[in-house]
Length: 69
Image (tube, rainbow, N blue to C red):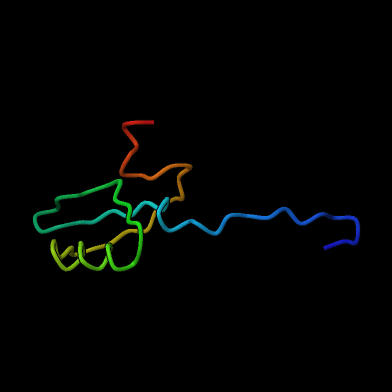
């Protein structure tokens, strides 16, 4: 970083705005999953037992609320 560059603070609160999607048995695909914390995510994974987990983009809002924005 050059001496005249100014560092802009960036929020590190990405986790709750990160989209996760799950692929379940019989190719059922669930998008727009988001979680407040790791424990909430772990409980959901244990509950639905996905075959595959995709980590998606960081939204400007919580992905699970995508229809309200």
